[in-house]
Length: 318
Image 1 (tube, rainbow, N blue to C red):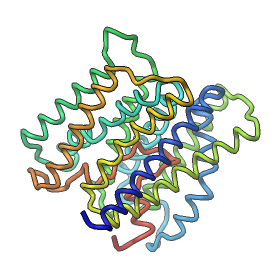
Image 2 (cartoon, helix red, strand yellow):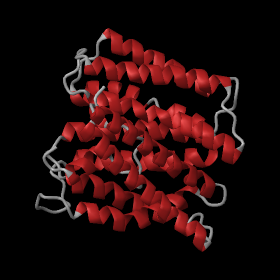
Image 3 (cartoon, rainbow, N blue to C red):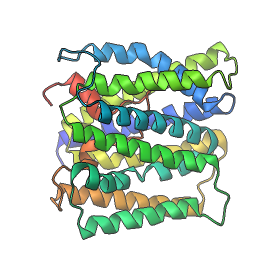
Image 4 (cartoon, rainbow, N blue to C red):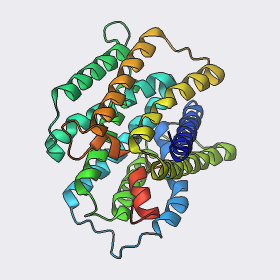
């Protein structure tokens, strides 16, 4: 393994640590405030940071999308993914949320069939089926009550995966500005409207923490950009699974959470399935678009925009 690959892998691990810290802050604030309120202020405070990045967009134009239907669906999926993720982190143990969200590469593989015209072979279908079994082991329906937090995590995974595949489908026919700004605006409107239903006044230190969420998400995104530029996607992509280690440590140290056996077993199966899919795509197994490695998955939220879109802004020729 070359020095560049090692540095890229290290940057990816660091990025995942920042993402995990991003989610820990969400959980800390979720103990005192509604999750949609946290998402509203986090996205509001992310506007100045993201706007500085958007100013680098080399293409001229407006916010009018070239494919309004697909952009509208991506916007809806991005907003739903953010809402689901913030709610799940506020109400479930960290490791359990990650185990469910790790199903995203499996869902991308399934969604790539109708949306990208992918042909999925028997090997990847087997990995998908095993991964979904892992999700059932984590959820263990019938042996524990399934809460709104579990449903929110599942919805977050589906929303993030669908948004990722739509970005791949649109390719470079839409400006990154359009694909980032519309979910931000949609999130701002919907979460802002929720404040009329439930709002709790925030102390200044807590409001500042919502800004920390925004800063952590964007910083981690740029570290991932550098990681993908230094290393092969097949090496960087599996690093997302290191978040389960961060989650276990944070959960034990800050929240007194223990990693139970079903979550550990289910997460192991899901992670193994996801890594196998990345390996099959890397080795050329019946994949034309390579959605899992190219999607650069991380459960997308407004405070953690899609890394592939940020890279198109920061390095237009990549």
